[in-house]
Length: 171
View 1 (cartoon, one colour):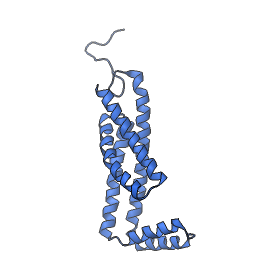
View 2 (cartoon, rainbow, N blue to C red; view 1 turned 120 degrees about the vertical axis):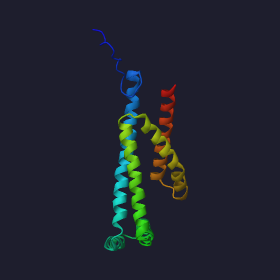
View 3 (cartoon, helix red, strand yellow; view 1 turned 120 degrees about the horizontal axis):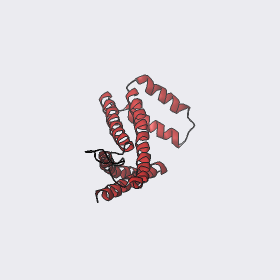
View 4 (cartoon, rainbow, N blue to C red; view 1 turned 60 degrees about the vertical axis):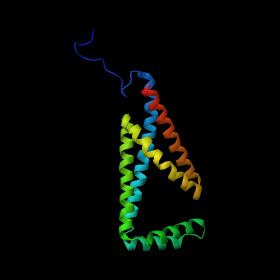
């Protein structure tokens, strides 16, 4: 059985002729995609919460909830956050909500593109993630914590991996 006349041989998914060598790459890309899509869910939940803060009764319920918490560091953090948020104008609350939605849209494009193994998504992820790392490091320097350190480490690993893959596939 030969090839049909005029038809090119099919290349494996991912655009390379390496076949089985691309499979581990797609596993890692899909893991990164799941990480990005998890960020989408968190960003959407945050945007919803921020936009709900326009309702004064929501802030009143949050103050009531904070007052019922046992004294301690958590209660202090919640009260500080409520004081900060209650001081925002409705326009700033809207802007914060829409910026969060914009991040969710970018993370969605990254996650779906990476899941599908698209090269443009790898570049987009490198650019966006790299641009956010300095802010995350600044945040970690001012408010150190395991969660922030873990996010910075994950994002550094993602950028390092994707740059390495993009260089290898270009060669």
